[in-house]
Image 1 (cartoon, protein in one colour):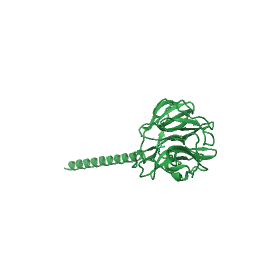
Image 2 (cartoon, helix red, strand yellow):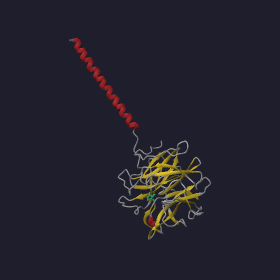
Image 3 (cartoon, protein in one colour):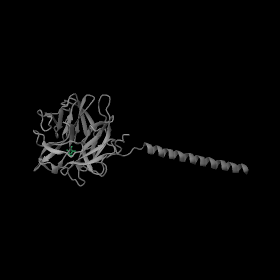
Image 4 (cartoon, protein in one colour):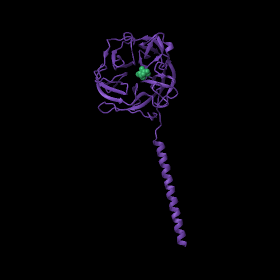
Length: 321
Ligand code: FUB
């Protein structure tokens, strides 16, 4: 009898020890999951709808982005108005500097139609270049130029780039190491030209861009990495790129960067030793085709300079420590 009781006691102790062990294991697993699970940081701006992010690292050591703005009740792109400026030092916390230029402050411009802007620091000033329709004619879209002494604006309109008026979309400005600034633009047919230092005139006749494919739609972008020139764009169905040895090209077609978004209108910067891909995506945060959201992903190059394909993620990028 005594032996039976001891055996029962032994079995109970064994089972309870096992249970305790299992519980500890579960708790450890939970803890691990919490520490491994990344924060969902996309979209990076959630209090308003932003699109077409033009990212830059300026002299103050911060990363800045200038975006267009989609209205919450938008049913097309005509109502887009009021560019915004945002800055960050950790890629996750963004300070909203508010509206930096509105169509009501552009004397020659129509109401709305404030499409994808780009920015540049030149002549000790900050400039915004933007595609915008002329008052009374939505088909006459020009490349407006606005200036500010500080990155957070406000920016003051100083007119448009002469000689390229007409159906005009999506400027990108790129300054090479020799200080020369080039303008890239176009819809369906990509074009480029050297800009004069006043940024209001072309310094040469525009050229068509040879990029080894025929899928260009809009959103030209140029950046340089390891001595190579990367011409990228949106094909209407995703982002693609080509590489060359000069800002003029010709560029060798390489394929997709970010093929899964209908539009992405991207820009690329290196910040604190890491490359980042800025784009907009409609898929999250209650977004839609006309209510887009700015997102960010890491961008990696292969040894041969090719860009690794990017997939939109909810995690996006994590806070720089
Ligand atoms: O955002 C309005 C237009 O749609 C832009 O100019 C294009 O790049 C696309 O994002």
